[in-house]
Length: 207
Ligand code: ADP
Ligand code: MG
Ligand code: MG
Image (cartoon, rainbow, N blue to C red; front, side, top):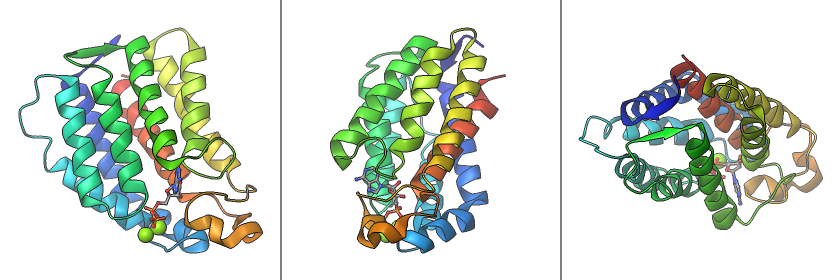
């Protein structure tokens, strides 16, 4: 496909929820090592709540994504709820009135979403957070050229590599930062959930 429609976005969000549920134990185990052990249950609960609103009528990309963002904010107590919630809210408001996105507008929308994560969390690259998966993924997506499918696959590969690259990092934001140097040697759970969002994008949008 060359464009992503509202039903395509819904399929992406549903698949994201399935992957969060399948990987919930793994995400919480990662969070047990450097945080409070709830990232998997947070993501599973949040995206289950999202799945519960996806049957409503959405005419536009922004109507859908605003509903998704506010659902995540209100259903997830941890840091990740407002951060991912802000991602979808900003992604939506950047595309007011749109009913489909081509590769360039999808990149623009996700970039605006990630700027929201940065603004809200006041973190940058290399601080061992979800941004260490998001930022290389968007860069690879933008650089890829070619088809939407190829760009999504490049983004997902970079997200997974970014997730893995958080392992040696020392956390300077979020709960993991309380551990200081002892946070090194573990993959960041939020970077792992971001890689799942990209995996879901490839599985649903790169057909
Ligand atoms: P909590 O830490 O409140 O229990 P979660 O466990 O659900 O929330 O989410 C933790 C994840 O949130 C971290 O692994 C990290 O990726 C992300 N995170 C935490 N603080 C920030 C921040 N300031 N900026 C970006 N991401 C952050
Ligand atoms: Mg946690
Ligand atoms: Mg928590």
